[in-house]
Image (cartoon, rainbow, N blue to C red; front, side, top):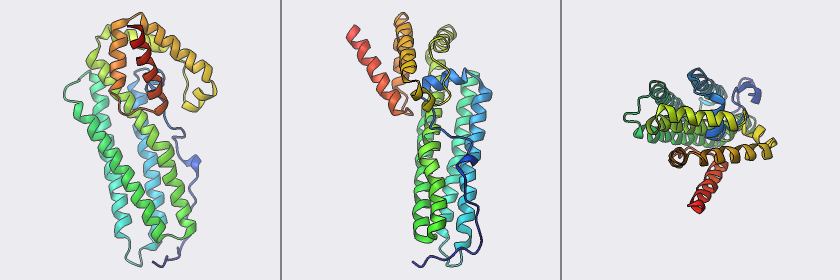
Length: 259
């Protein structure tokens, strides 16, 4: 396919345009930082929406000059799917936050499956957009589009996934724990888990991070029922970062060896 030349100059998106600049956090660190603040939770939704719509708008501007060949149907469909998945995902997350805030645990099992479905739909739409860019855009415009999509794949997607994981853990805690047990758990997290804002920051202080996790685990050892409940809840979290999955696996193995 002959690639049409762009007939107007586009601004090259800058990484600094995006508000979200890290891949999210393990659920325990997210819980520590958010400290049950619904304002912080809702602020994340607003930021995610702005960053994804920034990519949407950039892509729209990049593709706009290439409509003369009549090959715009597929990239327009990809953008439509991205926006539709975003709107639906935000609605589902607002529903999750409302349930957490009101301590309403009724009928939330399908919520996480629906969120996973929206994430998959959005990821597929971005991949489709990328492939359409390879077919239709000039090399220069393809580089612009690739930069945006790379930011989604490497930063926004892991961030959204880990944020959803935190929300799932929070709602399961509401469902499975009494107010006293929840307060007890949050107090332990606040006491033993450092206030790292990004995983990169935690990685820079690896020894401190793992020492804190070990201290938190040891504190939970003194609360056997709470520990069992917490580990079971965390094991149900499919929206989990690899390093957290590995850590929880070690915790479960340690718990089995102590029985």
